[in-house]
Image 1: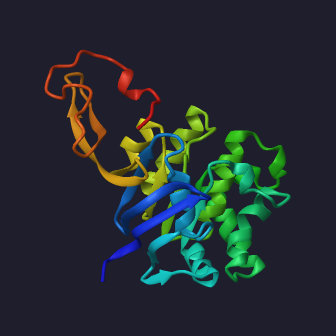
Image 2 (image 1 turned 135 degrees about the vertical axis):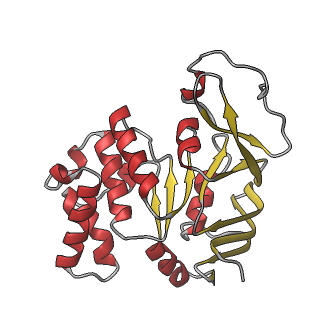
Image 3 (image 1 turned 90 degrees about the vertical axis):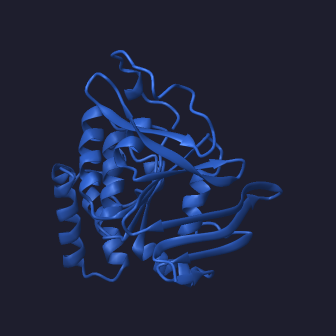
Length: 260
């Protein structure tokens, strides 16, 4: 038996007659932080949603936390152990106040009101959001909504964190705080990001959605003469568009936002 928390075997999915994923295979283990990269419209969001049962595959098998998952009752158990951060925070926030919203997940898992409130307060404090506790959710800024949505996911204490563009809408200060917190979490992660900096900072490996299927992406150290080294990503078997061996003068281009 695989030690993967989640395993997709030959999973296919589409909308009507349009195929989105074809015979996708993926494993995410407890020690991994896997970046899911690829072009817009490649099916990355659909793949995350398949894992928690928001879509049903047209073929293949999804195994999560040791069991094959097919029915809605199967996926309710998955959603208790795998938290999904949506790309649009407005799709995730629906309670009147921040504290109520963050406490909703633990309540839904059977915690008492007192326990759920304590878990929500603790999570907000860990993210530096305690001052937002009594705020009305729909009056928050875009960046505040993003952080509160993440707090709602983390308050459920998941084993696996699924994130769709986690830094979407965050300013530089909020992004730095978020990434520092994510780096410290002892959680497996599968996340979508077009921000190369986020992928290079968080991921232990990367997979690329290309032509409706997954291929392993190559992540490797790229030393520079100007004091830093970091990870670059290319599809396995695809030549890089630059020479990793030649000396590179001082530059800032590797720290700009771009498609991973």
